[in-house]
Length: 293
Ligand SMILES: Nc1ncnc2c1ncn2[C@@H]1O[C@H](COP(=O)(O)OP(=O)(O)O)[C@@H](O)[C@H]1O
Ligand SMILES: [Mg+2]
Image (cartoon, rainbow, N blue to C red; front, side):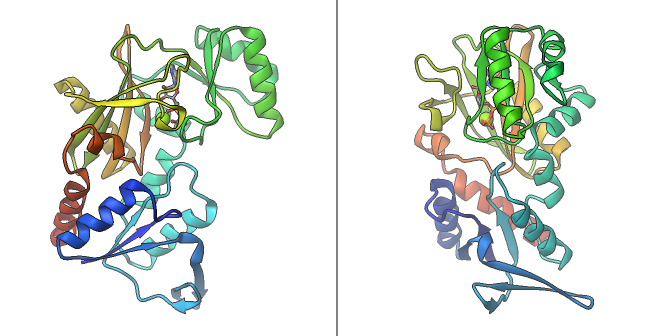
């Protein structure tokens, strides 16, 4: 197959690994920068050019754009989809996953366990939001953040107010969430491809930090998830419409809670922790999808 990976940074570990795995399996793999595409509509025809040249297309497009995906990149994958190309994950699933509130609405609506969350329109409702999640302490976060950026643990009302006013002042929206203490098990990330769990890691935050993201100094270790965690991850991915997903959990006294679902999960941690060749398993899944039409 001709595989096109859409990504802003061709040097990212997971992207490099998937291109490599595709080539090893005999495919042509390209890494394309979404910002070099021009989308055209003329009459009934949707066209595309790449870096100023007419674009020949590919058999399968794999967007790897993360929650920070721009409006142009979203438009690009919708354009590809509308022009009849195969895009995995689908544009609609990517739109759900990039929005933490939308994800939690969907999961909670189908009975999956998620942290208590409140979304207020402005700082005047902050106290109400804190009460609704049983805080403080409470976690404040941007609904479309990534890599732990802007995720704040507010110990008391004053800290929550300062953080919320700052975020709202930047015209950012703020989700207020119950703080789930992590205990010794830390957090779990399960990688899903096509209804199967293909990797799992336990994530731990660095000392003095509550966020477990690698970008915040967190570490990972290989994990053997329970049957319950696997079933939850598969259900969460399916509800979001994601064929490829990373599902993040925290352990709480109430059991597992789904924190977020990622449409372009990195798997450097899983592979480095000895969790196997995730890249090849993703490519194998895509081969099967292409073959099944
Ligand atoms: N409600 C919460 N309770 C405890 N820790 C949290 C909570 N929300 C987020 N965190 C911590 O912060 C990290 C980043 O938050 P997350 O919602 O996953 O945003 P991002 O998309 O930036 O990774 C999580 O992996 C977790 O370690
Ligand atoms: Mg996260």
